[in-house]
Image (cartoon, rainbow, N blue to C red):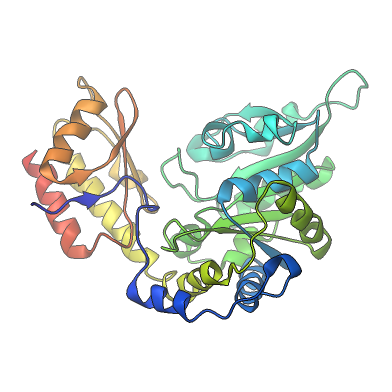
Length: 340
């Protein structure tokens, strides 16, 4: 059987031998009592990396985004997010159905929200209107092709939030990708946000989990909401150990994924059936158009040739590089693209 190169997502990886050993050797306890040493170490490490006072291990990024919306936005209030935000498209409308918040979608090039666009969306304080309570940003931005928010862009929107009395939540599922791509410490990219979620099971290669970071007071309340949502776990150290291994071993290598994505983009730019700007690829996500042919047909053809990817629209395809795809694999992927 020919080898398949799985570029559907960076979530498709499996734990490495070293990560599996770390999980096997993990020191565990009951995390509902706060007694799991591995979970506690992961939370301390995550808080340090993001520059926050405390952190909470949660089963998923979706839960990590929902909890701060539940606590800091609240029922009947509005949250402003980019119109292509992950929380609007891929989290089952939980911000409305569970947290009771009303999303307000804002435009912005590359997934970036600018104060001049956002400020008019903040409601005036009138008793018959909902209150605006929160702004959510996403770094890197998935549907904008893995684009990175700079420190200045984040601080600009945070300045507006502070001026208008709003909280800022950063969906930093791939914040480590942004940190590597920009050459900026994650704590600086997270510094202006009140709360931050980042994912361990995307580019970092862990099998499960995200970490929600913020103030000690916020995390104490977040722990209660995690319990309400069914996210409290007992001997979760076997999972936290994978996250610790990922943070200690798999962050710097994200640069390889970024270079691989750029190489694939350049190969796609050479063929007639794909359309994209290869210079727009900033991290590990490549979106391209399929002019005049259904994206599903191209996906099917590439699958037969050994490349797994996904259609995200009638004429749009996404490829995501990850730690399961080596430099030699990318050589072959590019060759397949050029032959297809």
